[in-house]
Image (cartoon, rainbow, N blue to C red; front, side, top):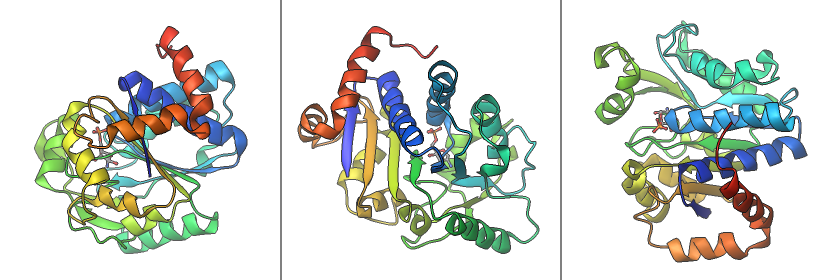
Length: 274
Ligand code: GLP
């Protein structure tokens, strides 16, 4: 795992976007795993900006989202399908038929989960999986006690997740209590993971996930098992990380980060999204 800390939310988001853009340019038919949440809104804004301003081409890529609420129709403004269309898909040249999100309205949820897993397998797996982290330590909706080998399935949401996400609904009672989510086992099979974490409110959960023991109580800690995982945090989210000095050394010295150091410097001069 590599942990890269950038000074602020914009710089962290920009770096994550540049890593994704690099992948899409190098492998135009890449399969991306996508995440939702407020953190990702800014990242998608940046990708849209790169599509418009830098000709970033999404015409051949495929996407699989981590999760979806159970019981929300795709056209509900609270569904993750709506979120993805609104924040990304409607603004880039992606083929909508290549965008996959679990169907939380399926009459047979088990069969839907099996279908989702098979679809991922049929395209050769996910090349780069984007992740955010919930305050309950989840990735996707893998709430505490999610088996580290779990596959796509339905999951009940914890009170903490309901508190975190219900402001996005018209009142907590309107928020679904269950969701379909890729499992930890599914996520770990992606060829590469990219976790983006911003804000002081995520500092504790991030330090547990990255520097604490691997435990199903913090499902994000399972990323420690992955052989190619990059964590990008802003300084606020990184506040409790003990290895900060070492992580910074890597970003400033390892050749693989050279091109990103240069763009990080030029971003300082033009640090805005549009
Ligand atoms: C939801 C999603 C997660 C995401 C989390 C973080 O719970 N299911 O995939 O990581 O939100 O959200 P935010 O970025 O809003 O903190």
